[in-house]
Length: 422
Ligand code: HAM
Image (cartoon, rainbow, N blue to C red; front, side, top):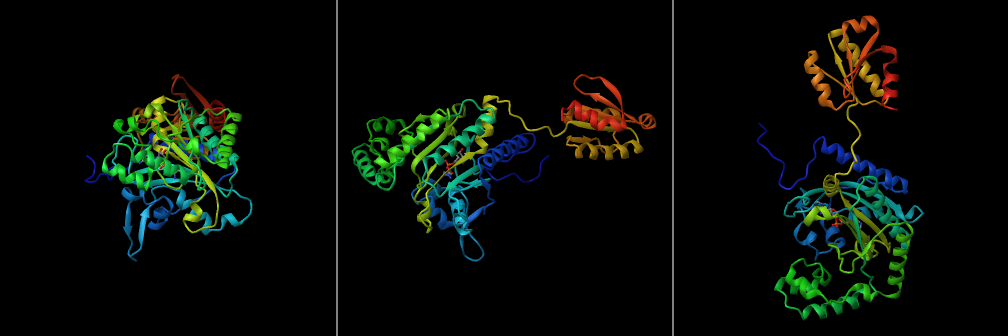
């Protein structure tokens, strides 16, 4: 029987062994970020509500419908972060990282984010992101670098079916004219009232409408890609050239719009074909005006958020081979009190030598302890009885092959290291 309580609806939780996989893929990302010179940030989980209103945008679903907002005891309006970018930039500015020389500031962070969405497979109210941001450079090489980092991470996990969708959303020079053109086009369509309202507030989002009746009318809509200014076009072409140099394949997707308002120029999504409706496993782009939107100096930036939950689902869907490191390689079985005492110390010695080790506790009998050894997933059992102690040796059992040999106590750690190729 479980307790009287359950986790709140829509919260994605992980327990072993899946949580070990979750932690391992996050660790693999930490390594990619380190290799590319990104420092780690540990951020506030809740922020001033206005940060998201001004940063992410009032007209977005995320801000208008999905935020977990509450008043604290001092009457301040706070919101559980629905995404990381606004908070990262807030922290970079607050801590003056952009003034310490050497732009862009390159940082990454991870943890839970919260959106009050309707829960389903791959869509949760508490979910997890890896977020990486490069702040303070307009160089298209930085755009390509962020994409390459995410791409390399997916590759390192053994994911083979990830698609990269790429677009440019223009800048404050060329987008207003395009926006007006798009509004003219959309106003001529047969649409319901909420969608008509959306045309006036956020017309680009209408391009993202998934309903077939709307989709059918959108063929022939003007596309941002055809209306980029010279500087945006040059920037976009350069990003594509650089991706080509890196051997990264992408799909030009002129209808790609993102759900957050801060995007400018380069925008992208990573999509996984086996995940159905929630196929967006990651997304990112430039936000050259965000710093000013939240009261900071002009500071262009780019980054991405990768969904950890959906990445786990993608790994499972592909049957990818990536696995968490073993939690137990050697399992100790002691027969008798004295043997237990010695084995306890030996287990600690194994761990100091970098071998994942565990043992049967509670004075278990041989049969039960051997069952525990099998269940532990260990490759070897180390069995110690009165007679072994007298002989100064232990029994080393290969749990897969079943064979057992006596090994001198003084040599057991080095023997195990050799067998586990350490
Ligand atoms: P986003 O596209 O809203 O972008 O979220 C990024 C990723 O988080 C999505 O591709 C998806 O994998 C995952 N995700 C979002 N919502 C949920 C959910 N309810 N349940 C499970 N997974 C989810 C951002 O958040 C931007 N801050 C990314 C960014 C960083 N852009 C620039 N820098």
